[in-house]
Length: 322
Image 1 (cartoon, rainbow, N blue to C red):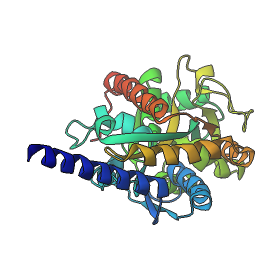
Image 2: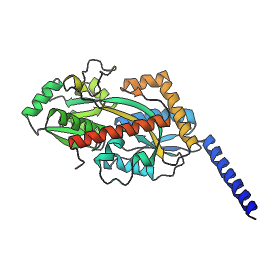
Image 3: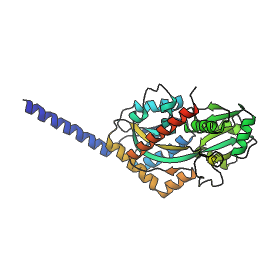
Image 4: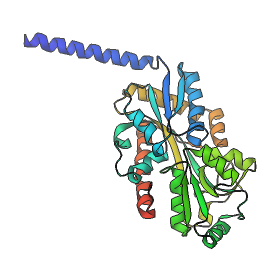
């Protein structure tokens, strides 16, 4: 009796495992929802839509970008964490996921624990841009103006806890500039007010600011990477004026913990193929993006390292979400 029961259990487990493998091999069989925790118009949204179009073309199902902003990135993130781990809900992982771990003290989730890394996409510098009416032409002049007008500079961001916010906080900490943080629900609204002169400075992800820089609607003072950005070689780095300053944004894909490994590897393979495509690389380069291909574990390492890095910045700068 016991032997019969054991054999039956083994057969059932084998059957269920086989069904799981079959479904993973056929994946995707229906549209995939890709949650971007910001409104349309910002870097996270632009990059997701570029990659979603590619995945749709190559994987035979529609990858639908769903913007779910709010809560400093946390609303969209929690929605993915609470979704079924079946491969049909993805998250656009971005710097806020490394920053919020220390910026928010009572999060109901832990991204490193609750999100399975799937694939890295790109790393981009941020760019320090100012409204055209501000009478400064470079970082040194900005610092001088800021110190001569303490509290009169409004520093926009795409939301509390984003790399845009923390890049500015790091600048404040390293220069002693007294600026007022004005968070927005995404880069699009922040850029609109910067162009209109309602705020004076923004440490934006380069892809969303690039068209406005090239169009002369805002002025770029510096990029936040240690090296100059090849797509805009005439723009200096913040570190040229503030030695040691460095901040970059990184983007990739995550899924709920427990998603089948075969599904994760399927998406990872397609993303890596996309990042190796010369046309895709050229398109990302135009946005200031440097591909970060690799295994799911490679992207998981980036997530962990960035979380550790920004924890130190949050603690040193005293940044808060209040």
